[in-house]
Image (cartoon, rainbow, N blue to C red; front, side, top):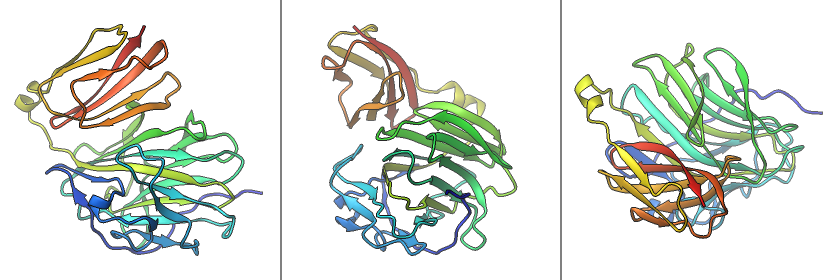
Length: 300
């Protein structure tokens, strides 16, 4: 018999590698100060709920960025809600912030999963949250007041999830693989102080990588007009895809029509080899030092 997911309590410190003036990346790499083994106690991450120290682990596998990732194991020791969290308040320097990460859960008919952004470290009220239902894989997202059903996710597939919290416009948004699945008003609580990866330890775990905390500038009308333009060619393409953009490309992700991540590249060239992809339609997600965009392309 299963139960309902609740908000939680604990405390932690901080410490990450800054990627740029606007974005901080956490991808659990040695260069960021992480070592293989238990994640609890590293770089401000704190385990809670009686979870065994060996469950939240930095592992040299399943990475979507670099070589390491965070793997949450499950042996069914707790059979109750537990997880690992980090205080990100020092990384959030303005009113508007985006928090994105790559996420994969092991199986359905096992654990419930939740990702929460809390307003503070005292009462742990939700600012934003997502859940994955253990029976169906349905991604549930929290609006300003309650949870609503979103798309169904498949186990053992990487998904990129982004939470956008904009106090300047009182807006909360969720994105899955670059596609917006919800936009609405923020609720009573609007800060992004703690991020928490939660499950109830019913025999299945999850994996996380490439966490990005991005502070958004509030653009004036003249700045909006200067937004970066991007083109891809040829489209359809057979062997190579050319990306024309003003900015330096920092990462590329390719998703199939099911939303599964099929390729992830860091600091790639502006021409990428796609000859090994199967014929079909794909989404190309590109991040530069100026912006982020998603384009559709066809592999012949």
